[in-house]
Length: 512
Image (cartoon, helix red, strand yellow):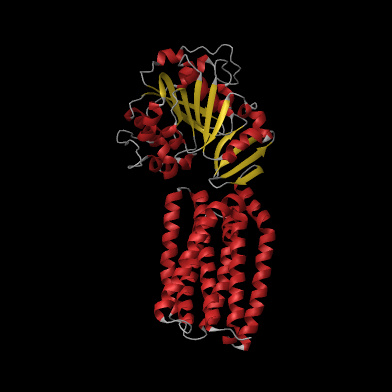
């Protein structure tokens, strides 16, 4: 069957549109994986997208070396791209499980995908030259590729990542690219030699079987890649549109991980939550209205509800899935004593910064129990601007406390948080404790008026059911030796001059 020039040109543009979708989604997948494996989302997205664009330039340059059978080379490029897109996440997870150079594999895959896309666009332009004049040819080819990139980005953000996850999204896009390229092959088949046509048909069959096999085996392979990195058995894993949540089990104890970083262990989480809650709660007389930013596991709320005069707790977490874990997952319902379903608590799914900007309420206590500031995204929740918002929403006798990482493993980061709170016109009191599964961990408590260490050490903990915290331990919690490194030059952390995440990344984590 013979097809018109218009039909051939249309098939070519559809192929470029599909390439735009699958190519950009592959880059977003690799960027997301790099963020999980390496950290610092903004840096990883910047590097990988830049590397891809550079590789596209190289691909365009290499395309001039192919002088004949351009249609065949274009279809072969589509086939290879379909395979790479499909298996990109799988390959990254496999290497993540067995080696420490998974970051290098991710960058390499980004280069390969960029090269293929860079080859395709000149190939498509040269093929379409027979069907459209130059003025229309260039604009139509580039238009379809760029439009595909937009659709791909929207698909990844609103469908792929939140619903299909990193396991199945690559395969869906790989199959889409393969199907469209096969449609193109059928349309342009009369322009391909008989021998090449037969070889391409075999190649299509092989690639289809390969992708379907990968789709079938993807989940157990990714589970293997994850399990190798965790010393304990994984009992729960979920990819949300914000983060990777993993729960592991050792004997009768459970650990929670977000993006590979341990958040708590049921073995000793009370050594973290009891000091963080009860010292601030005892440092003020009113507990009526309390705000918790983060803390979706519900353990902090559990400690708060030990005070009978608490009337209202608002818990704000960006990820509804994390809130659901604390509300519904049996392990955490038992651990937090069903605090997330207490009638006094209201959960809000929102960015903490935006919530504070919009709320009209004033709070007796504000607890900030967020992940460590190991990237620019989280950095804003540890800035002078954020702390000024917190101070504005705090009652005059109110108490603020934030988790502040480790004063020993990330010394400059810890003192940066303290200094930034002071720059927001808070009076501060640093605290720390040796949490067995986390190491030496710290908080910074703050008020609008000066905090008296003597008054803190005289706190009474009578009538509270506590597992670890005692009156005698409080003096140790607020006592520090000299910093392990020179902190005199530590800068305050602001949105426009983010210093904290650099201090955090440059900490003594090799000793952790």
